[in-house]
Length: 154
Image 1 (cartoon, rainbow, N blue to C red):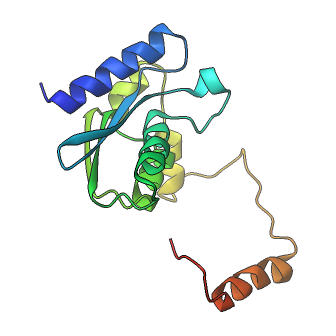
Image 2 (cartoon, rainbow, N blue to C red):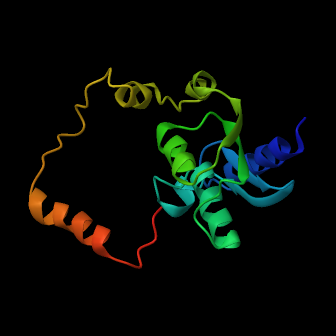
């Protein structure tokens, strides 16, 4: 078994045993060294975004002192949900390894099929009804940002 995946599995089990969240673990590795190990912490923090991958990204970013993790790889016990997949993208991580896939997680009650279909544009969203309001002043924020000489792009 891959040593990093083993650490992710151990983290997932610790999280489940402590009733912190579902059976998900993640490890971020840089140059063969573990930078972050995390488990799902949704129940422990009452934070619906505290998925293992995102918790690991937050920890790695804190430890490395940067938000771009392009020289890191992430190991996840499960195929990342759409939210985590995009967080991995925004962190610049280019290498992803996962164990179980989305169909396996659905067997445990974690069915993200609707989210994947919504992301692919093949599902309607009865839960959301987005409406654009006050576009111009909000749009102006981006124009102001572009004029800021000391901005940091990310």
